[in-house]
Image (cartoon, rainbow, N blue to C red):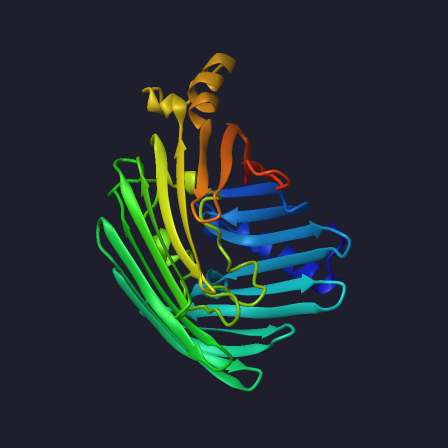
Length: 361
C-alpha cells in the first residue's frame, strides 16, 4: 500500500493512542489482514478493531488505475461522550474523495451528520433518540442543491428485532428498507432467521430470507453496527466513500451459523428482469455430530476440534439465469480461506483470504 497523506498519518497515530488508552483496556482488540480477488481484481485490506468497533481500515485495489482508501474512527469517550467522529479518504487517479462523519451525544439524544466531497457532494444532519429497546432517527441534507430526507426506526425484544426506514429526494432517490430477525437468547444456542427487503422503484426491489442452524447473530444483524440513519446519499445505508462506517456482516452467509448449516432464498426484480437465488451451505463434520467448541492443546486436537468443524461446502443457483456456483471454506486459525467457483465456462472464481490476530495490549 502506498503511503498515506501526512495529515492522515497524524490522525492514525492519534486513533491508535486512543485505542490503547486505559478507558478501553477491557475491550478485545484485534487486527485483520485480508486479500480478496474478484473479477480479476485483487484488493488488500488491513483493519484494526477495538471490541466490535473498527478504528482503522485501509485498503488498496490493485489494478491499472489503483484505488486506495483510508478510514479512521475516534471514539466519543475521548471527550466524555457517547458516539464517535470518523474521517475517510478515497484516492483515485482522476479524483480524491474525502469527508467526515460523526454521531455524538449522551444517553437518549444523539446528533449526527456528515460532510462528504466526491464527484457528488453531500452535507447533512440527523437526530437519533435512543432507548434500550428502541431507536428512531430522522434528518436530511443537501446533495448538489437537492434536499434529501431520511428516517429510520429500530425495535428489539429478547428474541426478535426489526429495522425499517427510507429516503426521499430528487434525482431518483426513493429507497425503502425493512429487516427483521428471529434469533436465540444466546448466540449459537438455537436456530434463527433473518429477513431483508428493499425497494428502490416499482421495477427494482428484492427480498431475502435466511434460516440458520445455531444462529450466530442478534439484533445487530439488521440494526447495523452504527445504524442505518447515517445515510445513503448514494450507497443505500452507507455514507459516500466512508469505509469506516461501512461495517460488514460476517464475511459470508455461513458466518451467521455455528451449527450445521444455512439456507437462503432471494427474490429480486431489477429493471424488469426477475431472478430467484437458492443458497445452501453445510458443515459436514458438524452435520455428523462432531462440533466441539472447547480448545484442547496439541496438533491432533487443533485439527479435530478447530479445523475440521470449520470446513464448509455448498453452493447457490440462480434459477432464471440457470447458473450454478460452488462455494467452500476452511479455517486454519488464525487463517481462513473462502472460495466461489462458478460452474459455467469462462466465469472467474472468487477468492478471499483472511488473517485475524488478537492484539496483545
